[in-house]
Image (cartoon, rainbow, N blue to C red; front, side, top):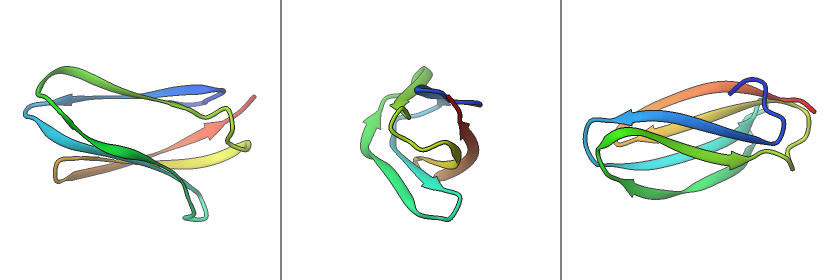
Length: 79
C-alpha cells in the first residue's frame, strides 16, 4: 500500500480458514499498532483496512500472520 495518506488496505487470499493478525511497526522496531486476531473463513480475496491518518510521516513495516505464515512489507505515510 505505497504511499499511504490516510487509509490503507492489505489484500490476501485464503485457501483455508485461518487466524489473522496484523502489526504495524516503526522502522526502529517499535510497535505502533496491533490489530485483533480474528478467524477468517476460506474463499475469495480478503482485505484488512486500517487508518494511518494519525501516523507520523515516514516509513513503517506491516507484519501479517495468516495461520502459521508470516509476511512483511514496508510502506510510507505521506500527506
